Length: 214
Ligand code: ADP
Ligand code: ADP
Ligand code: ZN
Image 1 (cartoon, rainbow, N blue to C red):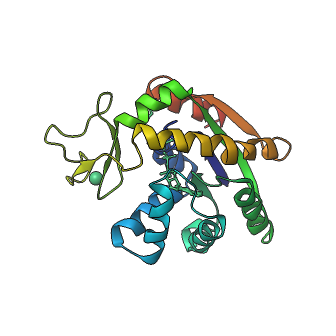
Image 2 (cartoon, rainbow, N blue to C red):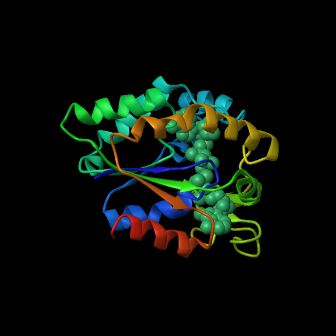
C-alpha cells in the first residue's frame, strides 16, 4: 500500500499524516522531516539540503531519490509507505514508479489536499515546529504549551527558517512549476482523491478517511 499525500506547502500534509499512516498500517515518510533531521545532526547531506531549503527551492532530485531509496530499503517499508512531500518533481515521480515497479509494486492512490494560496500564507507564517520531535503547531489555531514548549515531548517549539512570508512565495512557485505537474502525470495511472483541505483538522481527516473508504 504505497500512498501519496500531496498538496502545496501548508496544506496540512504533516498534520494529517500520522493518523492516516496509522490507519493504513504503514510508516509515514516525509522527506522534509528527514532533511531537517540531517540538518539538526549537522551531516553533509544536512548542509547541502539547507542551502536549498532556506531559499525555498527543491533539494536536487538525485540526492532526494537516493535518500528515499535507502528509506524504502528498511524492513518496515517493504509493504507500503505513506509519502508526505515526495515526489515533488516529475523526475522524482518517475524514479518512484520505476523503483517500485522493479519489484512488482505500484502506487495505490493519491490524496491531494487542496488549499488556496491566501489560506496557505496564514497557515505557514503561523506554523511552529518542535525542534526535537517535529510536531507541528500553529501560533493562533493550535498553540504549543503556554511556555512555548512541545505538548508531546517538552522541547522548544520554534518557527522554521523557511516559514517566512518571503520564502513561502518561492516555495509556492516551486510547487506550481515542479510539483503540481506530477498530478497531471498521475491522472491516467493512479486514483486521485481531491480533498478540500479547508476546515477543522478533524473535518479534513474525516474527508480523507471517507474518500479512501476507511
Ligand atoms: P504541510 O505539511 O502540508 O506543510 P502542516 O500540516 O505542517 O502542512 O500545516 C501547516 C500549518 O497549518 C500548521 O501550523 C498546522 O497547525 C496548520 N493546519 C493544519 N491543518 C489545518 C486545518 N485544517 N485548519 C487550520 N490550520 C491547519
Ligand atoms: P512543507 O511541509 O511546507 O510542504 P517540507 O517539510 O515537506 O515542507 O519541505 C521543506 C523543504 O525541504 C522544501 O521546501 C524543500 O527545500 C525540501 N524538500 C522536502 N521534500 C523534498 C523533495 N521531495 N524534493 C526536494 N526537496 C524537498
Ligand atoms: Zn516535540
